Length: 388
Ligand SMILES: Nc1ncnc2c1ncn2[C@@H]1O[C@H](COP(=O)(O)OP(=O)(O)OP(=O)(O)O)[C@@H](O)[C@H]1O
Ligand SMILES: CC(=O)N[C@H]1[C@@H]2OC[C@@H](O2)[C@@H](O)[C@@H]1O[C@H](C)C(=O)O
Image 1 (spheres, rainbow, N blue to C red):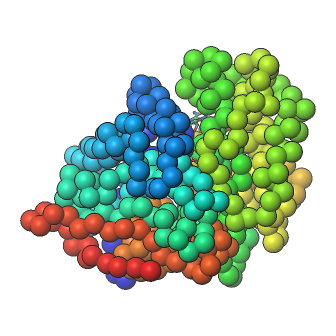
Image 2 (image 1 turned 90 degrees about the vertical axis):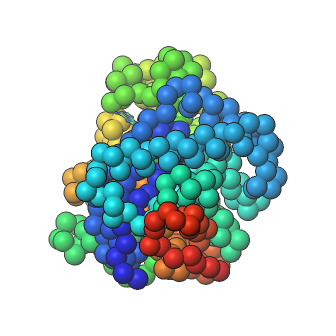
Image 3 (image 1 turned 90 degrees about the horizontal axis):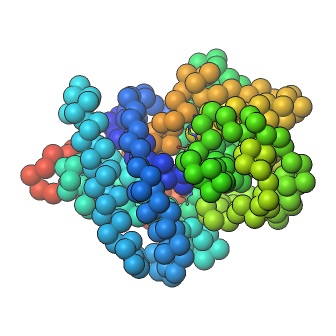
């Protein structure tokens, strides 16, 4: 595959907005990162998505859109189209080069045991609105082949890890950690496939806690947690969850962990304790790695919570592993998932695998995604494709 210029769009489990990133890639090892961009959702829209998570619990077949989910899907898609338009206006030098879009959409339900995962995102509508080829619904084919449907970023983490080692910036094995609403890890060895899985709650519980107790969307820079202390008995209750002892591949729905064990804590103690839970859950993942990583690279919004990072450093130090923030090794910890969706879109177009038995549990490496060409007369050089 020749090098393509792709935009990746991610609206993650934190439901805080749309990350957009531009990438030049051949879908293999060639990766040149371009500008990135974030469009926040206003509080009322975030609440609308939150209530959609409840509505989505009734979905039995992934194409169902009960209640206002159909309207919400359209609104989410139009907001993504608007993000692309704003990006093109702000980066005219890049605008004409973009050939395709990788579109994640918004996950509202994830039930791997039932092979059911639902992302709100209308690919054909986005193609019409942007005039670009769109690759969307990247999780479904993995599930059709026995996989968890998540995590999908490991293919991209693997390409980044090899580039870092080639540049002398790190050594194998490297473990990427994405501390999003939910956290996931990718362990990358010098040779062979990466090992990956969702590792536990990331920021989602902290966000829910400070929203419920303090009416604020997230604990900016861990300021609230700074006033509190870790309540070890509550952390222990979280870590008793059988999820942690289960071997990967494994993945989580946002609702799989709740605030119930933290109920009754003071606001600040709760925020500090839940930050510790995030870090301990990630450190527990080391028990399932074939070998301890030389370096943990931390990405996602949780790297801005100094308590999560300090607790991670303490634990990694005890294992003899280094901890680096994405920016310490020249990467962008906010844009990485959006970059990953650009990368996966190009892989999909090339028919390359996006998931592996060791990352999602699929029976064999499989590609995925549905590609929509832009309407006739609208420009895009990407080609239609079939997979399986
Ligand atoms: N300055 C900050 N201090 C502390 N936490 C922050 C800060 N900025 C962002 N966050 C946290 O990061 C979250 C967003 O993280 P991110 O964008 O990585 O999540 P996501 O992509 O939605 O999740 P996922 O990876 O699960 O799909 C916010 O909801 C908030 O909890
Ligand atoms: C079903 C779903 O959307 N899962 C998300 C979620 O957020 C983090 C974690 O859980 C991860 O498995 C996944 O997202 C990332 C981007 C992934 O698929 O790699």
